[in-house]
Length: 111
Image 1 (cartoon, one colour):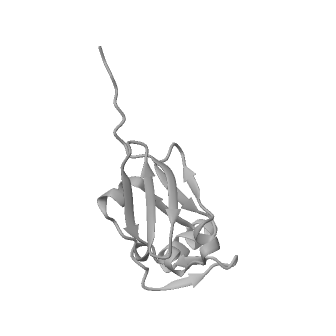
Image 2: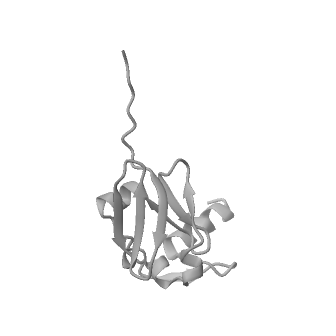
């Protein structure tokens, strides 16, 4: 008999406070990481922080207002997001790192 067990962590509930990002996982664990680990969420307003979507079957969370994604595995591993050295604004007013902006130009210009 073959039984496949999916041990991938899945977020079923999320709360963001002024200090922490707190995820309730499907297996009963609660994971909390400092809000400062996400510079985008640290810089965001409470309204932007509370506008999130749990992705897929709970593998991660997406904040559309600030273009931030955090995975359940990343929270468990303790992987903070590092602020890029230089951030510029896109034409739509969203922050884009210089590396991402270069890649966008390459694709747009056919390079």
